[in-house]
Amino acid sequence: MTILAGRYEIIGQLGGKGFAITFLAKDNRQISEPLCVVKQLRPHHIHPQMVDLFEKEITILEELGKHPQIPQLWDYFSENQHLYIVQEFIQGHDLSHEILPGKRSREDYTIELLLEVLEVLCFVHSQGVIHGDIKPRNLVRRYQDDKILLIDFGIIKETASLMVNAQGEFISSAVIGTPGYMPHEQKKGNLCFGSDVYALGITAIQALTGIKPVKLSQDIQTGQVIWKDQVDISRHIAAVITKMVHPHLSMRYPNAMAAIQGLMSESPSRPDWSRRQAIKTISCVGAGLAASVLMQRVLQVFAPETLVPLFTTPDSQGTTSAAAARAATQEISSLKTFKFETVMVDKWGKISKRYPRQAKFFTEDLGQGITLEMVEIPGGKFVMGSSLAEQERQLDEGPQHSVTIPPFYMGKFVITQKQYQAVMNKNPSKFIGGRRPVERVSWDDAIAFCRQLSQQTGKSYQLPSEAQWEYACRAGTTTPFHFGETINSALANYDANFTYGFGLQGKYLQTTTNVGSFPPNAFGLYDLHGLVWEWCQDTYLDNYHGAPTNGAARISDRTPYRLLRGGSWGDKPSACRAANRIRYPQNFISVLHGFRLVLPMTNNSHSSSATPGKEKQL
Image (cartoon, rainbow, N blue to C red; front, top):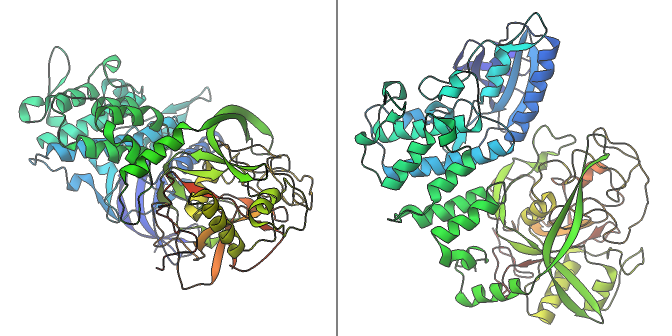
């Protein structure tokens, strides 16, 4: 029995040879999910510079693993002159079990394959990474949800094959890729994003024809793959795949985003799959790199009449009325725009980048000259929870899972004392100040505020679901804080006597501050890390098994505890991470607790989340 790093018990070999061998292993320190994949890298010699390079590649794999269709990286180490990485084990089968010799796949199967893999590749390419070895064996269909995952990135194999020459330079001793799937430039060692597009196109041809790539003929003069005479598919799809596998890089789609646009461009026949795939692709791409360009193009071509319903919130039966759609349109047309600046920090907490941004909002009149600013939050898809590698991670922050969030509005700030006074005619706070957050409010108090404001305005104001809160807090980022890997007292109000990561100590204020005293995140929201804990709709459960994937609140009668997010002025920085969560009874009052509001995208009070005072029971 072989045990690596004192914990990973090797069960058997999954594949690989030469520089990289993959094993199935059992992590003896994990109880709930003990199975994992251990990849052994066998370089010629572990040079110190190679270890540095390996660690840089590991950082890339960590980022890639944040996509729900790429295995998560759990660990890495060196032992006995070998390098090892440990990744999530995916229960499923690779597509070589679906794309079989002699079997011709249907056109709609191939289209869905292309769309799903290209969406993942959009994320990969947006990170500046080339997969380098796309083929059926590196595409795994997960049994849990039938999704296709992209595995076995070439960067690790390339690192394992590196040698150091006499001049101290790294040289690769192997060409990354698989014969038949590699374009001409890759055979010469010149990988680019278009190389991945080529390999996926060849995979599509293999699916359609049932012919292995090495047995496909090529035109002697042009070098183009000969395959269209073997299949009966639409002219548009044939043209797209032909462009994906063009032998000349300049004539090929340059990256996954361009290939998706080509695939979704209008064809004369407008096939039956068009609208279904348009909507499916929008939901997959979410708020990432592809969304802003692709979403508009897809809707214009395939489903222009679905533009409003796609961005309204379904009622309890999952439908959206025309009146609700019109209300949403009217509300959106009245939005104003505000400009702001976001910041990012380096690993020591020093501001390293600044970005000018803008967002839309509307203003709610609370009476007595007091207003409430509600910011438009775009819908999208994100990975909820923290990775196993995140510092000071708590057990209740997992397992990580993908959540798709419909668009909604959220308070630019937590509710202030003057806003609470205007609606509830009282102020329970200890630290008095009109623009300071209201505190010493229980969950019950927050729900009463929502109910009163909803009656006053005719809108359905709510507490955010836990998923809405984390999505809004992260605003497209995946780091512990929306501004980076650490935190400092110039960016948030927390107990700065303590540090996180490589961050430094700062000034501990020991009290609340006016809302908006620190830089906002990319959605234009303020004070999501620190200041006051924010009540959410959800009841507290100690893990995410069975958690909703549509952004709805999770309500259960099995526990009396309600959930809070964000940390506070009195907490250590680790408590202020985007993924951190705590629980308290719903009638509990503290100077550390406040709340923030959300509003569904329509005015008709229908939402996939629980309505205040009318929570569903699981």
